[in-house]
Every structure is written in structure tokens, then in C-alpha cells.
Image 1 (cartoon, helix red, strand yellow):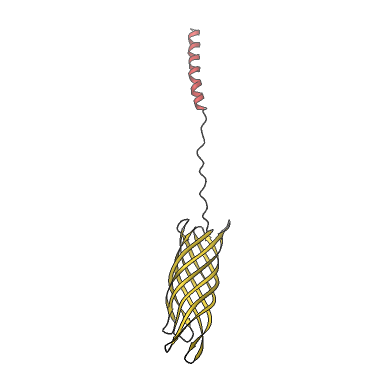
Image 2 (cartoon, rainbow, N blue to C red):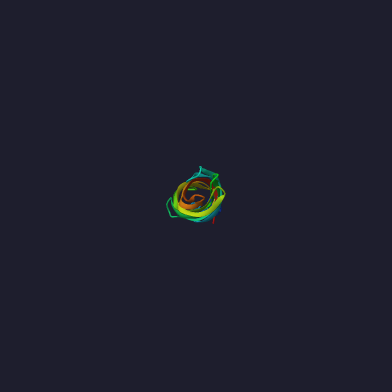
Length: 202
């Protein structure tokens, strides 16, 4: 009888060892997925814009009309939300009255902004230049003018490559002397620019 009990106990022990070994089997850890990279505004970009300009030119009715052009620039963002950049643009302009017409303008500007992840709010300012045509009594002459610009805007990054923006600039092109039938006439030109644009970021 004792030998039968002993044999049963031994058999149960033998059956329990593989089960225990299975419980102690090595389990591989779950695969590690690194966190997604934080969005950054750092990099080069190019883009296009279009909008509306209105303003004043001395010795002329108020000027207004369409503007459109291209821009390119570079942004740098460190570990925080501060974004620094530089941008240049060149614009076709049909901002005119019956006497004076702003034919084109461009800017070279610094930008400083604050990023809320994929939203960037910024201020901007720098050099402005442009060309105008003054016409009275059939006498027409064109001049280039140089001045300054100041403004601000907001930009939204749709993804890592594409962004859209809205921007306001005040452009002061200073004075230039245009010829008229009664002699030279100094014409000061200033304009407000409201435009929307799209950028491709590299």
C-alpha cells in the first residue's frame, strides 16, 4: 500500500515539474516605441502669396490694388518656443491711382516669433524697396525707391512640410523725385499690405 502511495506521489511530482518550468519561462519585454519627435520650425522654406494693398502717394489720390509674389526664408527654433528667422520676398503690384502706380516691391526682413507647437505668431521688420510710375499730362516716368517695413502675422503648419500664413505689413518707401511738366515733384509712398500665403518647408 505504501509503495502504491509513493508511486502516485512521485508521478504527481514529475508531472508538476514541467508545468512549473513553463510558468518560469522567459517572457520577452514588449517592443519599445520611441515617443514621436516634437515639431520644430527649424529649416528653409519657399512659398507664394497674394493679397491686397492700399495707401498713399503724395500729389496723387489714394492708391490700392492687387499684390502677389514669392517668398523664401529660414527659421531657427531651439529647445523652447522662441523662433528666429529671416525672410525675403518679391512682389508684383498693381497698387495705383490715376496718377501714381506702385509697380513692384520687395522686402528683406528679420522675424521673431513664439510657437504654440504647430502655430507660430511672429513680428517682422526690415528693409523695403520698390518701383513706381508717376504720370501727369502724358509725361510718365518710373523710379526706384527704398525704405522700411514693419508688421506681423501667424503661420500654421499643416504637417512637417506645408504651412499656411496670414500677414500684415506697413511699407514706407520714402520719397523720390519724379519729373512733371511743372518741374520735379517729390513723391512719398506708403502702403498697407494684407496677404495670405503658403510655404513648403524643407
